[in-house]
Length: 602
Image 1 (cartoon, rainbow, N blue to C red):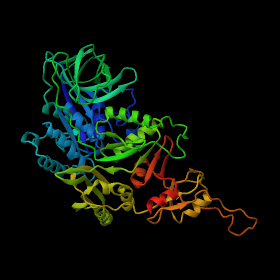
Image 2 (image 1 turned 90 degrees about the vertical axis):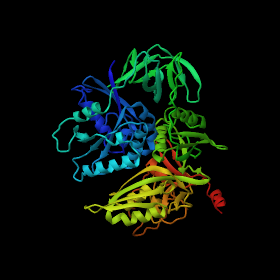
Image 3 (image 1 turned 135 degrees about the vertical axis):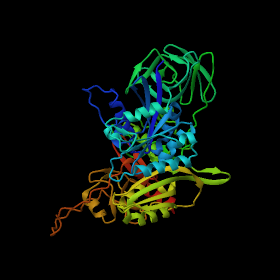
Image 4 (image 1 turned 180 degrees about the vertical axis):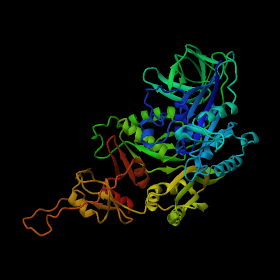
């Protein structure tokens, strides 16, 4: 049997997970000499490449000495933590990456907690030791304290430490060592972890940790063989999460070699496999030998903390986008059902008395990635403002709180503290380094952070860094301040004109350009004051035969503010929607008729 070790690379976002995986692959002969290799090769999804983050966990494998090492690259953003929760059971250890200057961040705590709960012994990799503000010894102490806070066992506290520069493929056991390869990390893995043990004579046991889809062979289940062996053509039993039992035949079987799937006739205990044959396989299901039912405990995923309403688009421009293919509630439902098959952190409920669905997830980014994928696939819909999900704990109404870490120039720290305290955040840690940068840590209600990122960027002149991660549920803190500005709402349908937009500039910031199609109830700008204002962006200059000195002066328009999908979702109020089509993102009032809005608001 092969000597198989499975590892997961975990860390906070931007700590260097995918870069380290690149180095492991490149230095172990996965790529041919003539092959062009892109950075972060495991981030193969279009959105992952565009945003520079890992969204979906993925498997690859390398050969080192006489070992096969399966590597799972995991997301670092808190919104995709369900990807980490379900794969952590399939590995023998985790390589915990911590930035040599930033130290442990909010998501570091989450991923480490998951590893410790599975009794894994992590390997600490201090990355980016070439930074000018690197402080590796101090970061090791901070990480050790984090292990202590999470009640690590004595064995887990005796974790090996590797220093390195993942970008250059360098790892060292001592910070002063000379090294030009990643080999010290691989040797540490072999020393830390024994190859998976078992017998091919055991009855098969395999739990599904991920799903995939192939247009030729259908749904694919992915999981680790914990007992026995699995073979192509084998008749097996699947035990569903709800206890139902059924049988199917393995029609295709694959294992990872490098970044490619290789078809095999059989695979053995310890290996991570991909197979086809069951059209309704789900995450958490256990595949067993046909005659011996031996299910594993179900995979427990933490509940969502935020929801949005996905509604059928009923604006006057519905269906006019040439790229739109799917517009009805049935289309949206089918797409959400398909997403539920692989996205275990998601919940979907049908809205009563409405053509829409309440979709709950881990955060704004988790849900906005789904919306972005849908619009690229040709879906058209309207989306409501994100809302947090409350829970009742011991008879007390509670809401989700997040750990917020801010690093910004000291000149701005007073503004940031004031802004977040207005949003009911509590300042817990404050410090300043020698370069004048302030380090602030807050506990803040998720409700208060919705829509704050754009204000943060403005208030720190783009020089601040803010990271946040779900912490826990705490008692409800009462009403919070909402958006300070009202909006400019079109009271006409037509094309915007430069003349009218020029005259509206004194009223606020425009979010549409000249010659943009607008309709009654569509938001065209941000009002300088806190109330909404109905305006006519389609009004042209009156023509007359009287000439004046300034009549034909060229108008100077300030460039319109454009919203990304995330910014639009953060910006809108409770009575507004984001209209999403394959080509456009528009902001609108939920009630388009101005007279009806007036009656409702009286």
